[in-house]
Amino acid sequence: MRVTKGQGMRRRSFLKAAAVAGLASTAGGRAVLAQPAETVAAFPKGFLWGVSTSSYQIEGAVNADGRGPSVWDTFSHAYGKVVNGDTGDVACDHYNRYAEDVELMARAGMRAYRFSVAWPRVQPTGMGAPNAKGLDFYDRLTDALLAKGIEPWPCLFHWDLPQALQDKGGWTNRDIASWFADYAQIMAGRIGDRAKHWCMLNEPSVVAIFGHGYGSHAPGMTGKANYFKAIHHQNLAQGTALKALRAAGGGKGWQLGTVLSLQPVWPVGGLDANYPASLMWDALWNRACLDPLLKGGYPELLANDFAPSVKPGDLETIKQPIDFLGLNYYSRMHQQPDPGGLFGTGYGSPPEGTRRTGMDWPFEPDGLAEILSELQEEYDNPPVYVMENGADYPDTIGPQGKVEDGDRIAFIRDHLLSARKALDEGSNLKGWFVWTLLDNFEWAEGYRRHFGLVQVDRQTMKRTPKASYYWYADVIRKNGVPTSV
Ligand code: GCO
Image (cartoon, rainbow, N blue to C red; front, side, top):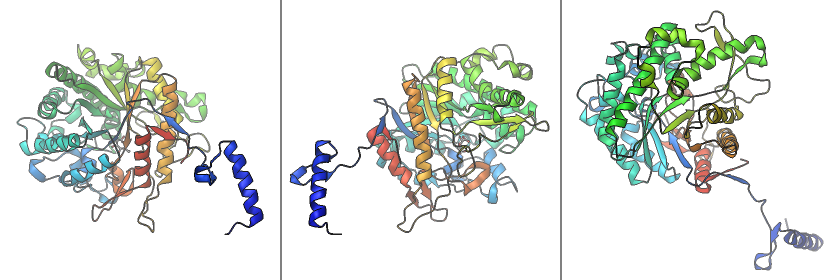
């Protein structure tokens, strides 16, 4: 539309006034209306920006190069356990396409990659001589990352326990502490000259609750006794491995830590009647792993239940110093009594009007600041990395071949802004790993859930970066978060 003379005059006088007010520039004599300055919440210098994945969810190649079966191979192939009968047999074929995925991380400027090592690739039966070809894969991956200036952050266990160990009781067998420590030393011995940050476990409470209490995850065990054994023996295995790696790692500059799922637990409706249910779930989900590690003892509420598994010296073994704590945060949890439930406490609804993600999880970014503040005030403010935060939303490729996932951008942005607030209050937050790089095998939900910054075509394995991938790359470039999408 041509500007008429009258309008031209008005426009010029407006722009002149705007220039005076600093809202426009008069570059080259032509007044241009300045775009409103984007406000960016800056993060500390050196803040580490990365991404997380896990072996069973992305690697595929489950029978390649000597890999043994894991409990998730068994579970996903059992009828009715996973939506649509999906399995991790192919997943994202990361085992063969890792170089392409490393390139995706590099192009976004990511500085660190938390991946998990498939124990059954390294020791097909979970013990004994390592499988050279399995080790070779993680060697190749480590070198590919370093070649792109990306720090490898291996996680030793992200749920894919060797089936052969499960056949001996798995996490309900106390001997697993030494099996895990042996495996940890094999792995660190192979890539520890280049990988300096080691996560022992990923979400032991989730493994115990869903995999050993409810049976809705692998290995599908049930009952309170199995939950308590699985928690204690994961805590014990973690401490045993930390001790072993500390002893072996002198001078290698290793930073050792672990990854916990920590989510504030509220009573539904804030009702007193629901408060005991929230306290119990907080103990089962958060404190059962956090307290023995950082405080040297189980939560009072559960001490009697753990007593049969705890042997003299166990709590000292578990309370090992860590160099960092990995925190997986997705939402708060809202609990109410569940008289018929295994633990007498069950999920309830968040406050009216709470936003939801694609899989109906509450969208509560303030809960992250709540957890970070609790770690700061109650747990001596350990160095923390958010190791997982992201959201499932149904993604479709648009007409121009793009995936516009504004919901996912808003989710990550709002959580980053919550973390920024916690930093202002003194949180010792050091970095952020988005969950996750690729749409992948979402456990019992199969492939119908999409958490990735990058879409994966299930037929062709083609990777398509989403709008959130480019948005996150911009965050990394700016070391700061735009305060609006
Ligand atoms: C977890 C696991 C991830 C999940 C992610 C989305 O936290 O459950 O670490 O493997 O895929 O959290 O549920």
